Length: 150
Image (cartoon, rainbow, N blue to C red; front, side):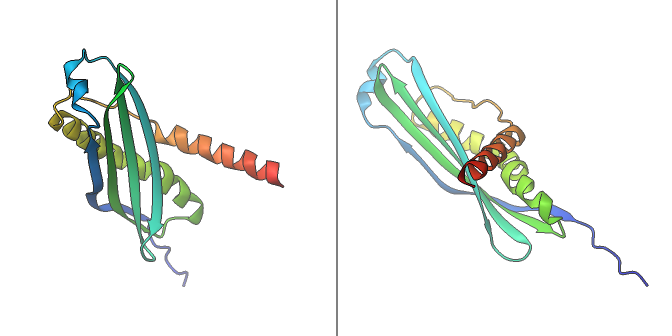
């Protein structure tokens, strides 16, 4: 009798803020007209916790300058514990590098908006991010780098 193949399982089991911060280097920014320049950086990493669980951390950093003066630096490390059971090995990278950050981003976006507003700055809503495209580009770049080093 043929052995039944287990059904793949993918689930978000826990979501949490691993770390967050807001720095306001100087109060002088509050006395000037608000016309900021924003620098937004995103990154993610995954860590295997056991055979079936991964922790994925999406880091979102926003630096705002106003009139060439640092206004604020907001950063959140939004984390999730994901169950990946019986997932084909060739799909795990895509799930951890694109799907999981896509799930975490709305939560990170909310935290950034909240801490910026609590710092008495105007609300900041980050635009949606295409993590599938970003993952594909990083894979292509890694392949180019590997071919260049071969």
